[in-house]
Length: 440
Image (tube, rainbow, N blue to C red; front, side):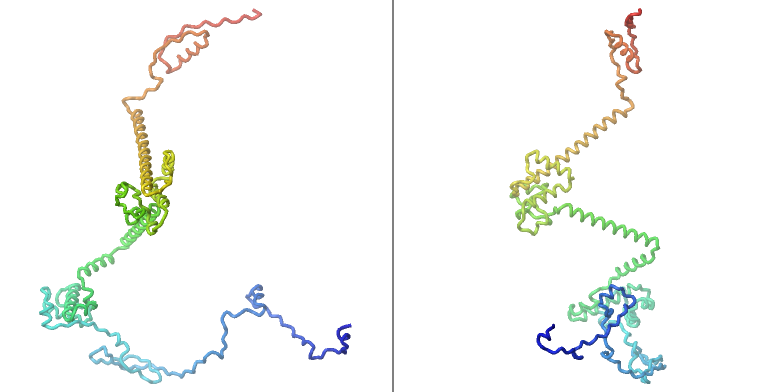
């Protein structure tokens, strides 16, 4: 009995449209080669995702079809604006579709000329007169400078008189600088010109060339030696810098620039008599770490000053100072750390350190004196050291004891070598009578 029987509905089979359509069986996908099973399982069996986003070919712009170019090389004449003699030359030119190139020569733009200053006779007589140079030499120099574009090596080779390159440069640049300055309305107008801004120094140029020549003429051995010297100097500088950093980390700064007074009082102030003492280590100063602080604990500053005082001494000496303070009934940290109390506390620690240092030096000197005394007594050749056995002693005869045994031992000791000087033998002792036995 089912729901249809209860409702009175006829039992008819499902229509074909209501029947579930059978799904086609899925074709098993084969794992691609080179992919592990775990990675392939993470993809859900749909395959590996592409490494880069794919773009359909239809979305790409097609390149327009270029016209076919006909390229040919032709031997053609050309003119250059860099030349003033209208010389016509020939070269190979790339011709596209039969159209020949026009215009100036393509390398004519690299023809740069130096702007050489020219002067008149009046300007020369007024500004450029030099006892070492004649007007003919100056005119020839400026002519060659314009002709060879300030190539002073070539100019020195073409110059009629024997002049060095430095002399030629000095004369040209000094004359040009003088002309520019006197032609300008004010000095500010030509202050940016390289000839005016940087004057030529012939002595510096000569020294530079001499140093360069000495450097280039060095042998391999000299270069190796110079490299070793520079490396050693670099190592020394690095070691000094490292040691300086360590010292700065261990020792707090003690200069006036690195220290500030407690309560804002200058070290040279006379408010307290100990502040004017030049040998006081504390001087009521605090380290640089508290320079920028306006409010701080004086006990913290005192701790840092105590560390600064005991930085040069060892840990054992610092413990001895603390022990001495406890023996004297002085607190290691003052209960009321006022400015005066802190100063007196630091001075007391300094005096204890001085006392311990003096005691240590005294012990060292006493040990040296005792060692020198012993060495002088044992090593002196004129006064040999005598042993106790060689000391002469007065002879005291031993009394005969009640038993001969004690006397015999004494005789035996006297007969031993090196005991005393020879003494007369003691009288013979009578033997003890033998006890009589029963058989006798």
